[in-house]
Length: 557
Image (tube, rainbow, N blue to C red):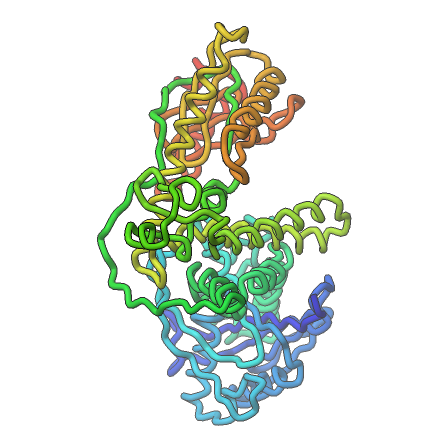
């Protein structure tokens, strides 16, 4: 990565009691800035623009102004002088940017809103709306800073991390184990109207609010990850936060289609209610298991099905085409479990499987490099890259099934899920038929649960190492029954394991025999965010007693 200049900033306003600041009334009283070269630990500029006088802060420049108009213009000149490549902050898209623009307009500071690298283009905050299945409906504002990237960490964290609360304070407590300066928002106006000392306290608070997003960005490596994502998918950087998954995939499809001189139709799709059958869930055998339960997972299930069976827009056939071209079943084309027809790879290789091959191949390379890399910075870059590639590969299936989308194709989506259902059932049968007392094993294996791409197997032995060995062996045995690149992997053992219901279970997660990795729970109140803390604590405590201390009686009490 180039040593980009990153400006992180935060503004404070003198609001009135109990009313959210309004740009037409409440003045901007401080603007704190922290400028860092990307890849360096410490910022090389730290300053605070203050209205009125302010006592000194160690290691920080203080600029004092009598009039707010002068302060705003000085900040704009500072922005031009620093000429940052990336501007970051916390909730800058919906608050700081629009507020500064509205305030300058109210004060009639005409030269203020020129923040972009195009000298005569004005920055304007426009209302935009973003809606997707993953994120729901969000009204946001977008401000143009042509030539400078924006990264609003609030939007980024809401997108990539599921937390109970998204205030800067709780996000920093979660990721950085530290918190903001202790100034409550009701005290801001009071401190500002006080002495230079009290304004200093406010400036320290404001400066920390500008520095924390910078620390979060470094910690979460988001600039690297998003740059990698933009490279892999070929979309502009600002699309990654303001748009959904589809645009990334469509962009890759356009790239591939251009290479092969294919034209993609511009379909007008109206949202249809057409439904197709999704993944299968094997009925759980509910209970508390105090023997090891091995988990067998399909690696990238849907992408590998699309590759294995050559499912694609370009390979989909209908009866007329088959008759017209005189194609032979099984040799030239296949019929999927739900009755759709696709030609085989020797007739024509689908675009989707080519895109997936590239994505998954690149991911494999990144993971290989990640394993031998020693430098922490490079490690994070590679990890970011492999995650970006994984997300992109997994979204290919989603786009074919999104009825409100650019390129829905239910034949591909429903064929993929029908193969998935078939494979989960086949895995269950293969495991239960092979691992039996009749075949010389100590117990009859039992598949106690199966979801979209994984099955949970109780092999019977109480010994952890033995269960892991059987899991590994079963994964290799079942993989050999499927077409490449479909692969069943053995990853982990749950021991003990509490299976409550579909998509709701908990257990101790083991990947080696020495010590468990963590307590893992799915869909239980400890990981859901729609209830109060007390519920979470009670359930967490009883799970700990049950799983770690193996105290069934105590947990019930």
